[in-house]
Length: 568
Ligand code: DGT
Ligand code: CA
Ligand code: CA
Ligand code: ZN
Image (tube, rainbow, N blue to C red):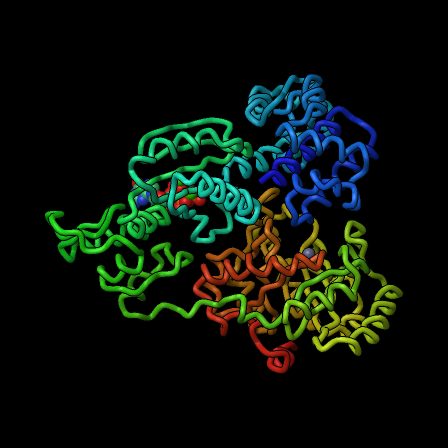
């Protein structure tokens, strides 16, 4: 939990420095520190105590002192000082895609805009269009980005550590005997709006537990408080609901909190048809004189005549009917995954060496890994050229002698605006696995975007389309695509669609995988840039599970031999 807070404060410092227009070196130092701390698995307060902070590469004297203060006081004096010059709120402007520190600074200095609401107002009144360089096109882009931000949803991976930290603290209070996190979080949705805690305790402790909850240091505001349900706002602006029930209602209460609403409403309707009554306390007979089931979710489902339904499936998409017939899918698990097909090394924009990435994949127990560094002209990705590719090939040749794991030598290449691929067929032909992805011109209309991918699919050497819809939860919505057209051509050309498991992407979305899994060829790729990114596989598994995928639906559940046969 402290780690999250430290990272947040350092990020805020970097943002403010950028708005003020401080030296790029200073800003970069803070950004680097944030990046480094994101990789730290130990508790930062323990590192401070043991004086080990400066052992972390990227943390120098100045920043280490700042971290020290944050750990000890929960806040940063330095940040407080900076915010006398520019209010912290101004940093919220930087969440709008296309607005960096410099622009945020201008908006504040020249128009006094502090918040996204203020920015919207300036668009409305026309004040923004009077500012130099704010063309009609640019303002339109900003409007779209604001609309996207206002969904108020956060990628699940981004909130997971915080959520588990809060649960830990609630348990430590000793006022509750069990704490679970329900809602979309438990259903493993790609994004969550708020967190829904479901807790069990003794009635005499309810009030004390609610008080403890509202007074936790992560809480910045209490939205509503009651004996059975309380809502608070966290430091990251996310709301958390806490419901407390007595032990005997554990199962029924967790079922209720987990939802989805449509799922529990369907269950209630079903109960009524059977002359029963279901609520968050239990399953009863019609006049409520007898409690039939409540202690565990299994009990409640059994009382309704069905087997346990995994939370990921609880969306009223046919899971209740399937559970009644005992015909739920055998959902894919991490153990079914045999390898990763999308990874980068420091030959392009990855952060680990070829050797580290290969050995890291082997450590995961995988049978194969595809190394797919960027190749092409897009300089942001430090792409390979012919010379670097040959060097990589040579190194790879030696490395494969040292390892058991099978390595596919692949590439990730750009689908340029026209849909063409600017890598020669002579090069592509030599590669074991070629992923083509869109990395530029994200705002073309749906038809053009669809055609762009269809054109790319004409290239016989393209094996897969990476992160197909381009959405990034913290940045931009997906560009519209006609998926039935794309999926059809993918199947015709034996081109695979990726579930990109990056936390911010989880692309393609579960509703698409749900529809396409029988028709299209789908695999999960982590797009790893560090060895630890192999753990992103779990986010891809979530998407697949929510889409009712069994291992037969996901290509990287195949053995290496079978996979090789499948690759064109
Ligand atoms: P979210 O927060 O938008 O990511 O999605 P959920 O599913 O977590 O939605 P949320 O937080 O509004 O509600 C959490 C769970 O609480 C929901 O899945 C079911 C339960 N719930 C809340 N209010 C109601 C209600 O009025 N009726 C029913 N049946 N369930 C409710
Ligand atoms: Ca929720
Ligand atoms: Ca809620
Ligand atoms: Zn990519």
